Amino acid sequence: MRKWLPAAALLAAFITGPATAGPIVIKFSHVVAENTPKGKMANRFKALVEERLAGKVAVEVYPNSQLFGDNKVLEAMLLGDVQIGAPSLSKFSRYTSSMEIFDLPFLFKDLHAVERFQKGEAGQAMLDSMRDKGLIGLGYLHNGMKQMSAYTPLHKPSDAKGLKFRVQTSDVLAAQFEVLGATAVKKPFSEVFTLLQTKAIDGTENPWSNTYSKKFFEVQPYITETDHGVLDYMVVTSTEFWQGLPDDIRAELKKAIEEAVEYGNSVALEQAGQDRQAIIDSGRSEVIALTPEERAEWVDAMRPVWKQFEDRIGKDLIEKALAANNR
Ligand code: LMR
Image 1 (cartoon, helix red, strand yellow):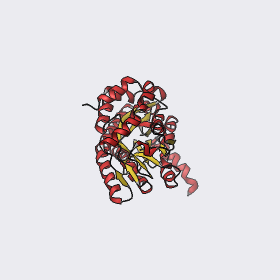
Image 2 (cartoon, helix red, strand yellow; image 1 turned 45 degrees about the vertical axis):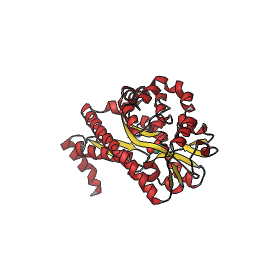
Image 3 (cartoon, helix red, strand yellow; image 1 turned 90 degrees about the vertical axis):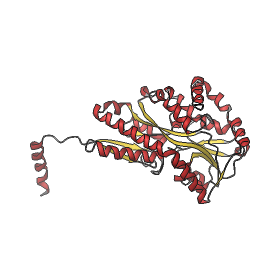
Image 4 (tube, protein in one colour; image 1 turned 120 degrees about the vertical axis):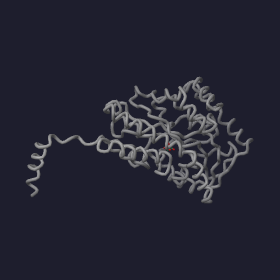
């Protein structure tokens, strides 16, 4: 029977014409868990594409750094091994220094201010700022404001002195800990839990959803509610892949991305609140609230970082970001 199969296949091809290439495959690689704003956005995008482009496009979502860590995903995208990703804004500095604005400590007062800046002219222009490097931004996705966690309580900036903190691959984030007299260690997200568990590092900074979903709170007895910075994402694709799509498919995919991003953004704030509460309820970590005086001390201690990066990021851009706090 087996030896007749090729002949049967040939006959079928003769009758039906050459076999079609099959659906366009989109690999969406990310590093966080599925029960986070980014995980939910990616899964919603897949569901929308399945519903609207069945047979034409197939989306494969790889969460939890299963395919690539965020430090590698952009390189993989440029090589055509991944088609869509949503790395944190802190991971783009190699491609455009303007994106470092999002890492300046105590710049945005809350997520609403971040959103106003992203939706404004400067924020929208940044989506297109990496085209010549082969990357196109398709939208901003929220996670949330960051907290600092450690093995010892952090009430004042001096409490961080001498400690080792993991940071993403951003010079601004490294400088932010160095001005406190702490050591910044740039490491991939997938290594953070083990680094904390083995006490190779003393602390880290993360939004509530990452601290909860990756169980960092189980190995960090103290979390200080600093809200000192933002962790948001840019949904990106490669220029080559995106421009190479048929117009109708690209338009449909763009719509699906926009709807999925809107959904992800709509759950981000609520998710942060729920995950914060779940951490408190677990009793594993003490959540430390800062008094206004303590908070002012953190702001004063970290503010010199703005000056350090002002030329690289652009004074104008910093002013535009500050203006987004006031509306
Ligand atoms: C991190 O590396 O801490 C974050 O970028 C992870 C993420 O994607 O939220």
